Amino acid sequence: MDDAMMVVSTGQGEAGKNFVNVLLQRGFAVVVLVHSEEEGEQFQSLGAVTVRYIQELAFRNQLPPEFAVKNAFVFENSLPQCCQDIELCRSLCPQQLYVVSSNRPHVELVYKGLGATYVIHSRSGDVSFLL
Image (tube, rainbow, N blue to C red; front, top):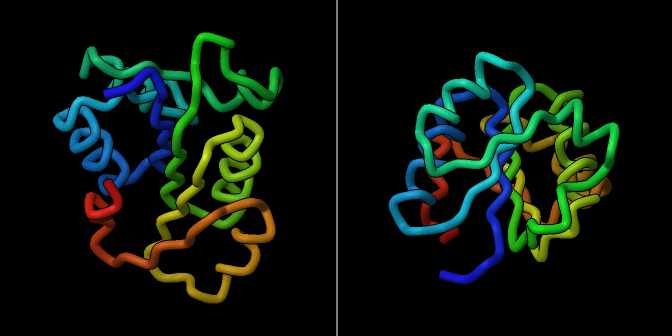
């Protein structure tokens, strides 16, 4: 593909993990933002994924300069965590920021106000059609 990275904050759910696998299968370079060491270890075992801890990035407010971010995908876990992830991803300057929400249509305006380009409502979490 190209040198741009896809950033994914999985929200510690299966939908985000499945989406990362789809990205890898289609040849995209992926940076996964994780909240815990356990989650980081799960993604590091995939081998082809770059893992960054949200706490570290929030402190520095940027990815290392070698990363050019094309699109970011935030999978909703909880409202506060999703808001934090959106703000961090927006600071990374992606072209498009997608938020995948499972059942909260009333928070769409909050997410868009924080910088989400699109809020996708999906009960299954399967958003591979976005690629």
